[in-house]
Image (cartoon, rainbow, N blue to C red; front, side):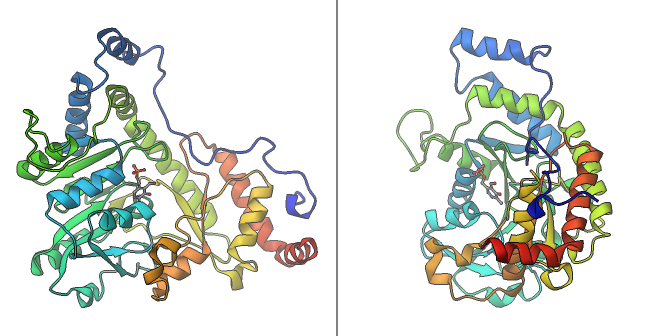
Length: 396
Ligand SMILES: Cc1ncc(COP(=O)(O)O)c(C=O)c1O
């Protein structure tokens, strides 16, 4: 067993591993070079044929007819709320175990977030007792497909139908995830994917809004274009949320190898899970049997008592080995400074996961040897917990 870096040994990875790395086809040998050349030659940097082509290919891939690409998932969710008529004073049920942008979108339209705890196993919004949060002011639910694991779409569908609520999915992590072989974007009134660099399908920055019908899709398109129907006599107060042609070509490149990307991620994710399941004091996010996850992130929850160390010391020990990590999502939204009015709220599962979660490097370029090394290091950290504790106290 090698000596751990935190105990004075050499780091396991001398050049830092990448936490994420998007996958692309070889640029210079592909048709995409000619696409980029065409854009520069014609000067059509926006609103050209590549955005249409990208939207049409994404639509075919997802099996979803109404697809509109936007400049980020954050703006896509704001437009989704506006298109569904969510306005100032409306209440929206939302998990607190998510990225800040999920909830910021609610605030940006003047609506009121009502935080719901997450499920302790899947980390997605808890549907047991969700109805107790519904009041006459509740107008929508936003659920999040956390790290690529789908929320409980069938139960959420039932609840939203029963109470006449709009159902929106933050599918930022989930391009490629399925439930019962259906892409997650097909559930709810609107789903919004992110295509920023940490995601499976990437355009640089960007998002994809998938709507249930043409009417909503047209509204999203109008809002994406300042609310200008074409004659500059605006019928809505919209924004510029367009995706550029260069970003659309990047998306086409990314889409062309998405299945390879997803299958590599799946292999890596499964291998990680197999090895991690043997480590005491660590648990994994549950992926229900009828789902395929993108493995947007691969996380572990550290149980301090059985592992022997708290999350932050494990993070410190991993980082010293050249293994980058992220504490997604910590703090949870209701504990953030900008949501101070919610800081006293208690959401047990959310707080427990948030306090103990670590996301490990996850991308299709990791080798099996990398994964074995990462997991072995974690095992050594557990075995040497007492010594590490002493060292950390000494160094403090
Ligand atoms: C759950 C979730 N929602 C929304 C976003 C924001 O997406 P974007 O950066 O495309 O606006 C992210 C970004 O990582 C996210 O993790």
